Image (cartoon, one colour):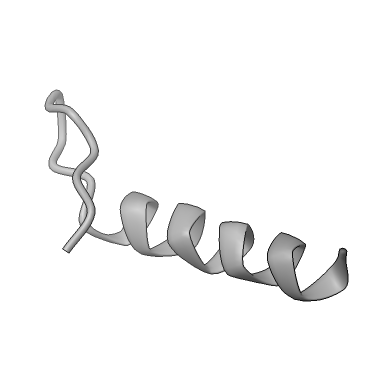
Length: 28
């Protein structure tokens, strides 16, 4: 599903964006 894939991608990007150096990624 394209929408589901895009949703997962957005979550991954957001997770990477808020990923602290040397820490665990977190969703906001």
